[in-house]
Length: 381
Image 1 (spheres, rainbow, N blue to C red):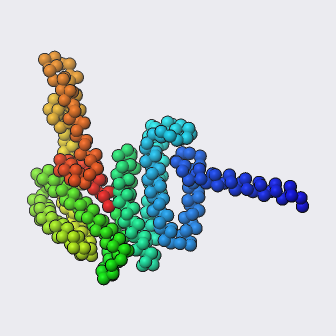
Image 2 (image 1 turned 45 degrees about the vertical axis):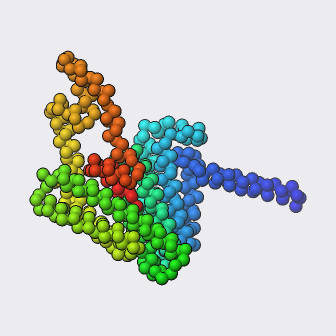
Image 3 (image 1 turned 30 degrees about the vertical axis):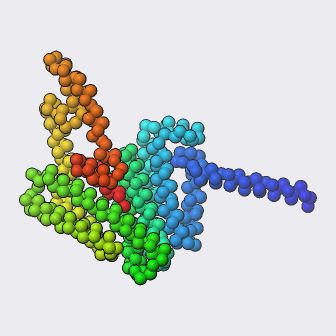
């Protein structure tokens, strides 16, 4: 056999292998709608299949990585591409009507839910040492997931936004499982002072503090809703809700003291009970028909808008502008300059956009029942 007969197949195989590697590298950064995205997902599926058979810990970690990757892909779909391929810019231009984008996002949200469930199932079957290792990673990742879900939820369709609410429950379940593992680990390592135990303690303290803040904000939301809805609630519900508010307030103060003393097990138990109390409080302060207090009042205001349009300028900016076009009242052009006072509408959305926890608390007091406030608090892990 000549050298030429040997070199040609070898060079061909090398060229094919090189092309395959280039495609893999290109597919790794592909976005939904790009030609190489399908290849990227195929490679991920193959990796998952292999890892599930050979390394449960790595399989669980890879599922967490894929959740983050899907979230970034959703963000990319919601943002007009500045520096991207011509093809993707064309796809985005074609889907800017939002329908196709929302379909892509729905598929990605379903993938995220699947990866979260797989990570949860993997955590339950790992040996103790590996379970603790994965729990530490989950405790960090769930906080990032909550922030990302809140960011993307602002531009989602109603159906996809409801999927995010459902997903928040899945993330919370995963987060709670990881916390249970870390609390048990901290109890067993109370006499051991090493870097690992310090990491567990630090992670637990941070997570318990965030859960404490989450419950406090929920208490503010439903306490404010009780005041708003007291007139239409039954006296029995008002009495029970008031007693629950007092109990929850006391329990949260106790939990805060125990966090400072690093009594993690006792703190976790109190916060679990408090979370159940908050759920009960939420049901007690709801109006009939399972509507939120703000929703029912908003409906009343909307009906008033239809019957008495001249009385509506105070609740929102849009009725103010609806007064000015009324040509029948010629003596009232003096009211048309009021649009110059429309900086007020631009100030009203600000509370829902505040990223800081302390600012959120103040925003919740002024708008205690909005869906955005409740979702923001639900996604704090």
